[in-house]
Image (cartoon, rainbow over all chains, first blue to last red; front, side, top):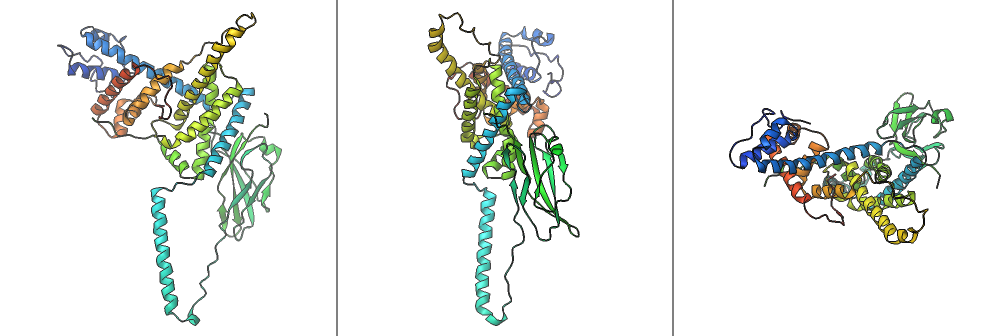
Length: 260
Length: 204
């Protein structure tokens, strides 16, 4: 692809400077190569005929650019195929292997001690310092204030526990959707299903359930039939007078084949 | 010597988040990793389908192990998928070479006399050695210069667009691109390292 305007070439017919090969010739070469011009370009061919060193350099460097272009094209083709689906047995092979990939990565991550970022480390230190200050201040207040005048300062933690029980990760069938998640005041739930297929409507809403009054849901075959092989699902808790109380984190689920 | 500022690919943030243990990043990372078996399949097909499913499965496992060990060294010279492709290509090349070598040295002499011995496999469409040589050379370039060449040839950006993205003058980018091409030419003329890069990030 020619790139005259952006490569510093005022014109495709930029003339090769005269005299023996030197810095000006190198500048000319860099402009011509940056513009993606080839020796089939009559103007370039004509200029190359006047300097043997320029011709040798041009052909050597141009072949490098062609080699990179071939590699770039191959990479684009393979990566485009990488997120497409294959028919028949090849597809089964890919699905099985993707299941292995998931297990491998999740196991390694679960076994790996988490590395804290510098920001997190700094934040943790600040929180620890603040907590120590509060503890010392509390101790001093307790020492100074008579016991009978103390108010009850116990704090009850809120209903922050959220857990999706199943399905999660790789599954042979979708099964029942079950969660252990009940913020205070919950009256009903809704389940939201999104596509998780890369490049194929990833994030697209596939289904949203009606009001559910227990912590489980069994989708119908008709609903399931419309889903791709990978989804993300989440559950929201609602109350009539307070709207949506909370929503669980979305969980990735993928249907894998049981073959082999 | 001047090198343009290294502008890492956004996937580097994702990899760092995975290494920091972010569950959300892990899910997104897995979507990238799902490309691995498909990449192995495509590369093997283009290489004349030398490996069968079982051998290809071993390649995927070796790739995973290799990827995991090298993950912290991913520099964002290119997209994560391209980095996965580079590692997969190395593993597939190694496995194909081992199998071909065994067939030539052991199986063919034994079966050579049999008329029923199948004809040679289809010619590979990908010259792995040539590809690997280029990627080894790209990996030896300074990160900024490799990124610049990648942006021009793999991401089809003009030098003007690259200069604007990197906040550099067009002249500076043009001069560095020219130096990068010259470096590549010199490295491509060197004898090929048959062992291939073990731990360095491929130029992809």
